[in-house]
Length: 406
Image (cartoon, rainbow, N blue to C red; front, side, top):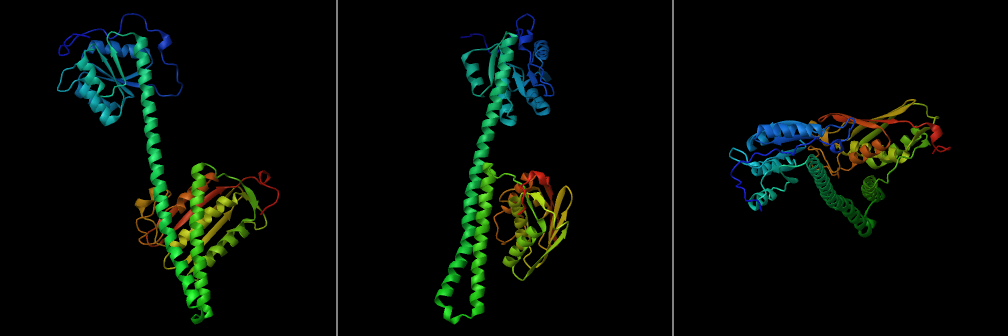
């Protein structure tokens, strides 16, 4: 046990004499930024000697502080990768207190460089979870090894924390998805049940027109549930990395006409979906029809959902030689500026949707499908006037697709 008095400052050279071996110098990292170190040491001569030694090891010394308070200030200012901290220093706080504050506020690793090894000092230092503890005097190889191990340990801690946060976020997301799915399924299921009971017990009293309308309402409710199931399954594929880009040749105008007709049937008479196609109808294009169907169906479904008073929804398709441009315009409620930053995040719903039902999955799926197609998506929107979503997809060469278009 060291019986030196920790209250009395002891001046010792930080390293034993001798040339620094190039064996311990960091290898040239090319374009990688040098590792930045902050020295907190009140003996300025010792600090400068240490700084010179570190520079020969190819570290960058961003600053030298001579007290614990100054060490905290310069940590905030320079944001080093690691702090080399003496323990006994003048001022209201010593190196141990400063290290604890640096760890708490900045999550920056600290290595103690000190002449003290008594039980009380070591015990206090250990409470701050330091990344190293080196006694003066020390060899360059010991300093280098301690710094590198400390940096690696800190990197592992950051990776573990990131993995933990990701796992917690995924857990919350799955829990939210289950809750939303249960809520969204309840409404159409209740409607189906009520309409089925109505048809069963009052069939003889209903006109054929009412029977047909109730049957259509059942079909609409089933379509809503199938759409939700499809979104959930697609999102699951994206998360598992099993949703792939698989282009094939299709006749795009016919594809769009069929898709819009199906959605128009579900939307009813209050909405008028129109297609404006600019391109050669007889020339196939090479796209991933599965991804494209998700992109267009989700955008059109949203356009209908967020245009509660009805109106005309237009789909403009510009088929160019190397890319496709889709513009879906609605007369709906628009999107507040504050929501645009999070618009394509899973479960995000704009602040002005009120009681309009939805899961917040549609635009997230659209974004994923567009990115898998190596394309881009943008939005132009005005509150209470409507929105236009613009999707740009590059065309794959036809010779890379199957021989027969769908």
